[in-house]
Image (cartoon, rainbow, N blue to C red; front, side, top):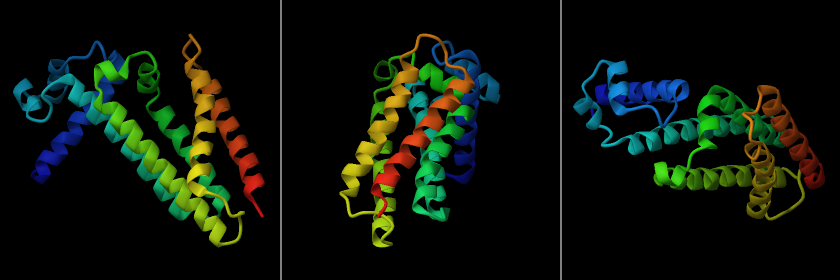
Length: 200
Protein backbone atom coordinates (compact mmCIF):
# COMPACT_ATOMS: atom_id res chain seq x y z
CA UNK A 1 0.00 0.00 0.00
CA UNK A 2 1.32 3.45 -0.88
CA UNK A 3 2.17 6.00 1.80
CA UNK A 4 -0.77 8.20 0.75
CA UNK A 5 -3.05 5.19 1.24
CA UNK A 6 -1.79 4.76 4.76
CA UNK A 7 -2.52 8.41 5.54
CA UNK A 8 -6.02 8.05 4.15
CA UNK A 9 -6.58 4.95 6.25
CA UNK A 10 -5.59 6.86 9.39
CA UNK A 11 -7.98 9.65 8.43
CA UNK A 12 -10.79 7.12 8.03
CA UNK A 13 -10.14 5.61 11.45
CA UNK A 14 -9.96 9.04 13.09
CA UNK A 15 -13.23 10.08 11.43
CA UNK A 16 -14.89 6.84 12.53
CA UNK A 17 -13.72 7.31 16.13
CA UNK A 18 -15.09 10.86 16.15
CA UNK A 19 -18.49 9.87 14.76
CA UNK A 20 -18.78 6.68 16.86
CA UNK A 21 -18.04 8.73 19.98
CA UNK A 22 -20.50 11.53 19.24
CA UNK A 23 -23.39 9.74 17.56
CA UNK A 24 -22.99 6.13 18.70
CA UNK A 25 -21.62 3.04 16.98
CA UNK A 26 -25.04 1.58 16.18
CA UNK A 27 -26.42 4.78 14.68
CA UNK A 28 -23.40 5.57 12.51
CA UNK A 29 -23.36 4.52 8.85
CA UNK A 30 -20.47 4.17 6.42
CA UNK A 31 -22.17 6.78 4.23
CA UNK A 32 -21.95 9.35 7.04
CA UNK A 33 -18.27 8.61 7.62
CA UNK A 34 -17.59 8.94 3.89
CA UNK A 35 -19.42 12.29 3.87
CA UNK A 36 -17.38 13.50 6.86
CA UNK A 37 -14.21 12.69 4.92
CA UNK A 38 -15.46 14.14 1.64
CA UNK A 39 -14.93 10.84 -0.20
CA UNK A 40 -17.27 8.49 -2.04
CA UNK A 41 -18.72 5.42 -0.38
CA UNK A 42 -16.94 3.13 -2.89
CA UNK A 43 -13.64 4.77 -1.86
CA UNK A 44 -14.41 3.85 1.74
CA UNK A 45 -15.31 0.30 0.64
CA UNK A 46 -11.80 0.00 -0.80
CA UNK A 47 -10.59 -0.19 2.82
CA UNK A 48 -13.61 -1.61 4.64
CA UNK A 49 -16.24 -3.82 3.03
CA UNK A 50 -18.70 -3.24 5.89
CA UNK A 51 -19.11 -1.39 9.17
CA UNK A 52 -18.06 -4.40 11.26
CA UNK A 53 -14.62 -4.49 9.65
CA UNK A 54 -14.27 -0.76 10.36
CA UNK A 55 -15.28 -1.25 14.00
CA UNK A 56 -12.64 -3.98 14.35
CA UNK A 57 -10.00 -1.69 12.81
CA UNK A 58 -10.92 1.12 15.21
CA UNK A 59 -10.66 -1.25 18.18
CA UNK A 60 -7.32 -2.52 16.91
CA UNK A 61 -5.98 1.01 16.48
CA UNK A 62 -6.91 2.08 20.02
CA UNK A 63 -5.68 -1.13 21.66
CA UNK A 64 -2.38 -1.07 19.76
CA UNK A 65 -1.81 2.57 20.70
CA UNK A 66 -2.42 1.68 24.35
CA UNK A 67 -0.02 -1.27 24.22
CA UNK A 68 2.66 0.83 22.53
CA UNK A 69 2.30 3.52 25.20
CA UNK A 70 2.59 0.92 27.98
CA UNK A 71 5.65 -0.67 26.38
CA UNK A 72 7.32 2.74 26.02
CA UNK A 73 6.49 3.56 29.66
CA UNK A 74 8.06 0.29 30.81
CA UNK A 75 11.24 0.99 28.88
CA UNK A 76 11.63 4.46 30.39
CA UNK A 77 10.63 3.46 33.95
CA UNK A 78 13.28 4.06 36.60
CA UNK A 79 12.10 1.20 38.80
CA UNK A 80 10.04 -1.98 38.73
CA UNK A 81 7.32 -0.29 40.75
CA UNK A 82 7.17 2.73 38.47
CA UNK A 83 6.87 0.48 35.42
CA UNK A 84 3.94 -1.50 36.78
CA UNK A 85 2.10 1.57 38.00
CA UNK A 86 2.50 3.02 34.51
CA UNK A 87 0.18 0.27 33.29
CA UNK A 88 -2.66 1.76 35.33
CA UNK A 89 -1.87 5.33 34.29
CA UNK A 90 -1.71 4.43 30.60
CA UNK A 91 -5.10 2.71 30.85
CA UNK A 92 -6.52 5.70 32.75
CA UNK A 93 -5.35 8.10 30.02
CA UNK A 94 -6.77 5.97 27.21
CA UNK A 95 -10.05 5.38 29.01
CA UNK A 96 -10.52 9.11 29.43
CA UNK A 97 -9.48 9.83 25.85
CA UNK A 98 -11.94 7.27 24.46
CA UNK A 99 -14.51 7.41 27.25
CA UNK A 100 -17.56 7.71 24.99
CA UNK A 101 -16.43 4.67 23.01
CA UNK A 102 -15.55 2.70 26.15
CA UNK A 103 -18.99 3.06 27.70
CA UNK A 104 -20.61 1.98 24.43
CA UNK A 105 -18.44 -1.11 24.42
CA UNK A 106 -20.13 -2.17 27.65
CA UNK A 107 -23.64 -1.90 26.21
CA UNK A 108 -23.27 -3.75 22.91
CA UNK A 109 -22.58 -7.39 22.11
CA UNK A 110 -19.09 -7.18 20.64
CA UNK A 111 -19.25 -10.71 19.24
CA UNK A 112 -22.38 -9.86 17.24
CA UNK A 113 -20.94 -6.58 16.01
CA UNK A 114 -17.53 -7.97 15.06
CA UNK A 115 -16.14 -11.32 16.30
CA UNK A 116 -12.67 -10.18 15.22
CA UNK A 117 -12.64 -7.76 18.15
CA UNK A 118 -12.60 -10.69 20.59
CA UNK A 119 -9.42 -11.95 18.92
CA UNK A 120 -7.91 -8.46 19.20
CA UNK A 121 -8.70 -8.34 22.94
CA UNK A 122 -7.24 -11.81 23.54
CA UNK A 123 -4.04 -10.94 21.65
CA UNK A 124 -3.75 -7.67 23.59
CA UNK A 125 -4.21 -9.48 26.90
CA UNK A 126 -1.44 -11.96 26.01
CA UNK A 127 0.88 -9.13 24.96
CA UNK A 128 0.20 -7.24 28.20
CA UNK A 129 0.88 -10.35 30.28
CA UNK A 130 4.14 -10.90 28.40
CA UNK A 131 5.25 -7.29 28.98
CA UNK A 132 4.50 -7.50 32.70
CA UNK A 133 6.17 -10.91 32.97
CA UNK A 134 9.34 -9.58 31.30
CA UNK A 135 9.30 -6.55 33.60
CA UNK A 136 8.96 -8.76 36.69
CA UNK A 137 11.87 -10.89 35.47
CA UNK A 138 14.02 -7.75 35.36
CA UNK A 139 13.14 -7.13 38.99
CA UNK A 140 14.10 -10.68 39.92
CA UNK A 141 17.40 -10.46 38.02
CA UNK A 142 18.17 -7.17 39.77
CA UNK A 143 17.37 -8.91 43.08
CA UNK A 144 14.62 -6.38 43.80
CA UNK A 145 11.91 -9.04 43.76
CA UNK A 146 11.56 -12.59 45.04
CA UNK A 147 11.89 -15.42 42.55
CA UNK A 148 8.35 -16.20 41.34
CA UNK A 149 6.63 -17.67 38.32
CA UNK A 150 6.33 -14.38 36.43
CA UNK A 151 3.86 -15.68 33.83
CA UNK A 152 1.47 -16.88 36.52
CA UNK A 153 1.99 -13.70 38.55
CA UNK A 154 1.30 -11.38 35.61
CA UNK A 155 -1.86 -13.36 34.81
CA UNK A 156 -3.09 -13.07 38.40
CA UNK A 157 -2.26 -9.37 38.56
CA UNK A 158 -4.29 -8.61 35.44
CA UNK A 159 -7.21 -10.75 36.64
CA UNK A 160 -7.22 -8.88 39.94
CA UNK A 161 -7.14 -5.46 38.28
CA UNK A 162 -9.87 -6.50 35.85
CA UNK A 163 -12.19 -7.25 38.77
CA UNK A 164 -12.43 -3.52 39.50
CA UNK A 165 -13.38 -2.84 35.89
CA UNK A 166 -16.11 -5.48 35.99
CA UNK A 167 -17.58 -3.77 39.06
CA UNK A 168 -17.80 -0.48 37.16
CA UNK A 169 -19.27 -2.19 34.09
CA UNK A 170 -21.88 -3.96 36.22
CA UNK A 171 -23.53 -0.71 37.26
CA UNK A 172 -26.61 0.41 35.33
CA UNK A 173 -25.78 4.11 35.30
CA UNK A 174 -22.97 5.57 33.20
CA UNK A 175 -20.04 6.06 35.59
CA UNK A 176 -18.87 9.57 36.37
CA UNK A 177 -15.24 10.48 35.78
CA UNK A 178 -14.60 10.59 39.54
CA UNK A 179 -15.73 6.96 39.80
CA UNK A 180 -13.36 6.05 36.98
CA UNK A 181 -10.48 7.82 38.72
CA UNK A 182 -11.33 6.09 41.99
CA UNK A 183 -11.25 2.72 40.21
CA UNK A 184 -7.80 3.35 38.73
CA UNK A 185 -6.54 4.67 42.08
CA UNK A 186 -7.68 1.41 43.71
CA UNK A 187 -5.90 -0.57 41.01
CA UNK A 188 -2.69 1.30 41.86
CA UNK A 189 -3.18 0.58 45.56
CA UNK A 190 -3.61 -3.14 44.85
CA UNK A 191 -0.56 -3.19 42.59
CA UNK A 192 1.57 -1.54 45.28
CA UNK A 193 0.29 -4.03 47.85
CA UNK A 194 1.16 -6.94 45.56
CA UNK A 195 4.58 -5.46 44.86
CA UNK A 196 5.28 -5.15 48.58
CA UNK A 197 4.64 -8.88 48.84
CA UNK A 198 7.01 -9.58 45.94
CA UNK A 199 9.87 -7.40 47.17
CA UNK A 200 12.84 -9.04 48.85
